[in-house]
Image (cartoon, one colour):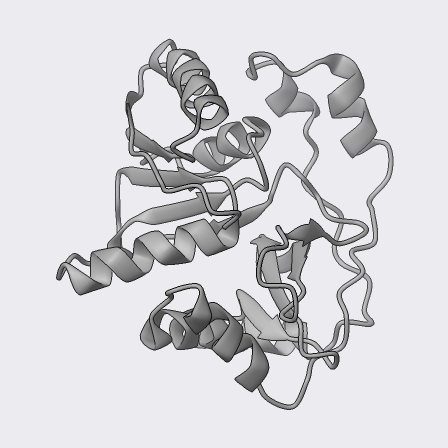
Length: 230
């Protein structure tokens, strides 16, 4: 309960500069397919995450997410944890944390039902949008975008599965770097399911990511998600 309060308090003080992201230099030597230039770009200096001001409630964002088929209980759980909120313009903001500090933001315009998420200035791509398991878990499910992750949570809840008892990570596209970073931070993870779009691009990239993590000893599989700009 204290951790949830801490996250909400951080979101209520968005004007404070975020703590510097952990040094990636040590991590870089263990990552495959990440160039030195890319790592140096993230370590040169901490970036300031520009999160918009919060609205007094989350009503418009909730309507928007429900129109995408997401269960109200899932929305409330993530909002209470500080992983999403509504800004003063009524847009839906997703927030990713590293060491309890906000490091990543993605905005969805609630008036544009087909628009994919837009990353906010200062977002740390290595962090993206992780939702840690609510209890010890060896399973990580990876998605392209936060709404796809919430749709999967909704389906698992409807099926009676414990959707909070596993790790979820939306990487903001097909980036593999956040998966490396999250699994290094959570060594208990042994199994990864790549829940990417059912189109050719999604399935092809999922196959490549599986090969990369199979070579590191993980058990991996693909679960296709209907691609509708989620």
